[in-house]
Length: 289
Image (cartoon, rainbow, N blue to C red; front, side, top):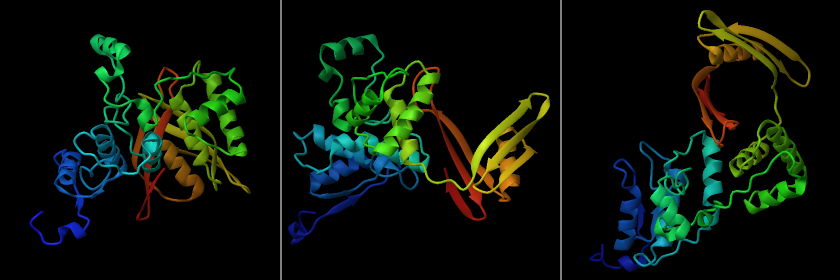
């Protein structure tokens, strides 16, 4: 590259795919060779095995300025929240062992690791959770927590709501706190994400009942309401999920094809909140919810 005339007048860009798991490494090598623009994606999403992960590249530059003394202008404290937001939008769970943003990124199980971290965090951590918007000081809220404590914790986590949304989120928090002994930060992210993502609904699932067993045909009964009407339907299916979607199809008069249905625990403990990702096909359109 240095043999090209007038190369100093151009900004060299690099765009790496992750087919061999080397997208970030190759991007860093390109920066070292003179590239000053790197094309990345949040969480490394992209074609096939994905692209260079923004959070990994940015933090590599941030913590190893001794090798690559360059800045990106990115507020790294927003990385975790942004990553979680994208994960919810595209219904693509973040692997637990994902660098920077995975649940295990700052977790230490081995005794020798725990001892080392307690004595000096830099022994096993080259960055802090706070640097990417995570909090190592986990404050546990419960059903006796007031609006002030709830609001304060949201603010500390960078979750800002207007007064109306805050009241709705607090009511949702109290519902969850009644079922769970402890409400963790992960629960708060889910609560706020659900509240901000709420839109006016044309159809509301008012009631459902599923009967299923090893010797019976899965059967679902549902009640759906709109502003003007109430629909009740029942249907069978290959399984309880298939049955309830068949009943919904009959109620609303729209034929859908269920392509994917996944459930993932997104908070810790026996009372964990679950995140459901559904991919439907209506006619030729694919819908992710």
